[in-house]
Picture 1 (tube, helix red, strand yellow):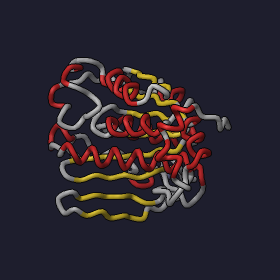
Picture 2 (cartoon, rainbow, N blue to C red):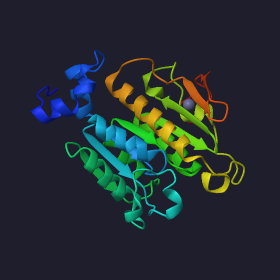
Picture 3 (cartoon, rainbow, N blue to C red):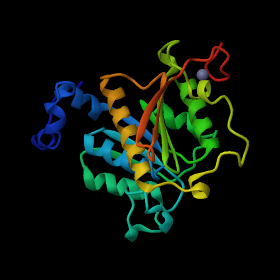
Picture 4 (cartoon, helix red, strand yellow):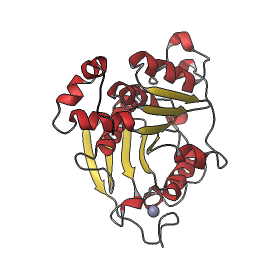
Length: 254
Ligand code: ZN
């Protein structure tokens, strides 16, 4: 791994490098890492900004939506000036403004069965910040098949959930379908556009998601694999639920 840093990189990342758990080696790991962010919305905004600011060297962000006024209450990578612009492009502009040292790629496409395999193959860690179950299950299954670590966050109203899925790392590590075997019937679980979400809640969850991505790249601390973090913002309470791998899981079992 290339451990040479320019003077401006050393200054930019000084507070990271000071951490014993990161240091120059960790910073080099971040620079070499390739992360895919699915969704440039309320979760993807802080996620993209913190990964770029932290020096994650290669970031791809994909989203096929354009910015609407009702997005700006929580999607803080976008601006009023950029209303109508593609969200992926807008998030890429925001990332480059924070840190021109990292390589950022914007894809204004919807993930589907035809493109998901090639897209994840080019990355080490996949982040799910999407807002619909079809994409969540598509991405989760593709990550199991492609042996990619998936860091997945979700928000609704005043609550957030976060976990890391890496069943390729062994029997202690469940996949997304070990937790949710099938998508819920259409209409059963409301979306944020139907039920609302407090803007700052998405900011917290996207930032926690960024922290878990950095931990996975650096291989430090306790992974969230095998645990689901649930935050109830109204109660101001976090809890962690143990997740077990399901031997009959339709994605990773057998
Ligand atoms: Zn599974």
